[in-house]
Image (cartoon, rainbow, N blue to C red):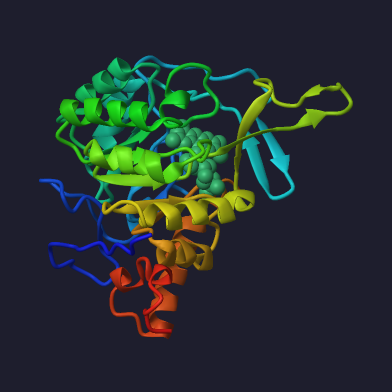
Length: 325
Ligand SMILES: Cc1cc2nc3c(=O)[nH]c(=O)nc-3n(C[C@H](O)[C@H](O)[C@H](O)COP(=O)(O)O)c2cc1C
């Protein structure tokens, strides 16, 4: 597998800055590589008394669909030995309410807001991207093509390179914003899907979404979740996510955003060394809303301790046998 190195065209303003869309006309400059993961920080406002979101690199909001959705039947969360299963089913307020009620607040923020979108058809995705065009307060789109919790459409696109590329191309044609495509681990060849998506014009790739799983309620003798299956997240999926970032980093030349079980700075640094340019904190925020800030502070301490001048020096170092120890 060839060892690819990302080349950043511009000088970055600080040692923690990351450009997530280096090939895009507008770019997507982050003050640091720590982001929230979609669905675990609402619209960024709900946690404002617990988390100073402005200190992060970017905020990714809850998955947004054309129409509001009530989501799946309860129960929708089950704890597991080393993470959680969720089957929220993309409960959200819909794109029109997001533009009307949420974006105006974001327009005053310094932290870039990335809107996560999901649809049932390619036309849905293109329409969503079109609606977000020119809305103040929105810096980029993250495309969920791998939600395991909805029965039609979106969940399927990410499992197949051709459909993943088709949906990416349709969104790119509908928007001038940078487009991040979020991949699902529920596929047999993630590198092929990543290559297809990059070839269709994605500016960056986020991975991974949750892994399909289930739990049984032994008293009721029935599946525990109302939707029967759910998506596994948290520390249990970290080794899988890390492997997939490593694998995809060898297959594409656009930035990767690593996600899956990141709870500490040590976890984040592993993902960066595997090839991620930025990382997202998800499930860890549900029990510790300060987790993304703690991860950021820990990265800064690590860099100071190790004499790292610039975060970009760490990206993908574990992939290169000749990198200094
Ligand atoms: C409660 C919950 C809701 C989620 N909702 C979304 C969503 O709307 N869109 C999306 O792309 N991912 C969603 N995810 C997936 C996360 O963004 C993330 O990819 C996944 O949980 C793995 O990261 P983690 O282990 O740090 O949580 C959700 C995850 C959880 C736990």
